[in-house]
Length: 235
Image 1 (spheres, rainbow, N blue to C red):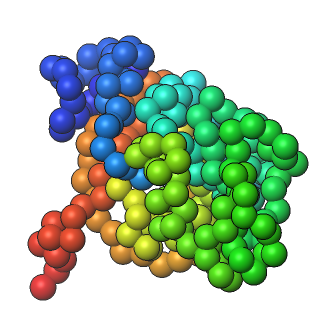
Image 2: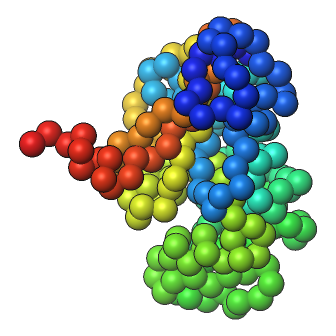
Image 3: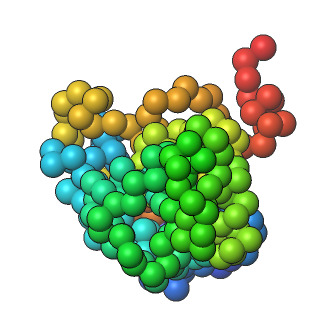
């Protein structure tokens, strides 16, 4: 893996130099309260491949970034549709699955380390494995607050695009980790959504680092503050 740039790396950066797992972990590490999105996309912007899942567009380099971000996180946040489509299983990191209708995907049903966040309208009863957050829609701010209180400050959201867009729109996201892999899939946006889908947002970001290996580009971006965004807006 080559490092192309890093604005606040905890080590000396020589553009083009090779970095290993320890340096990659250091680039993604954070002890702050943080909500980070993690996505992979093709060069034409699709968040999934011909089979409808992201596994067919990722790469070895993308997996290195994915693994580093998981190691840095205290808790994972994933939409039920993504858990179902990608056939998630339990992870070493605790996982909160968001489902408005309280439908726990089969692949994580009755598994340890999995919490379902849902609505009161779903009829689900609150217990240690079910959080009722919101009336008719899931109150994402409440979910994040409970996740941090239960597991720790660093939340990593792995999608899907609808959940990610809602998190960005509500101002909860601090960073975006995005890998571009050297693939093109074409097709319609309905079949191949972008990494944010369904909710319009207008948010500026600043680049923290860029890495490259075998044509895959890994980037980490920080959501700009309101002051920074106002300064960039055309007058």
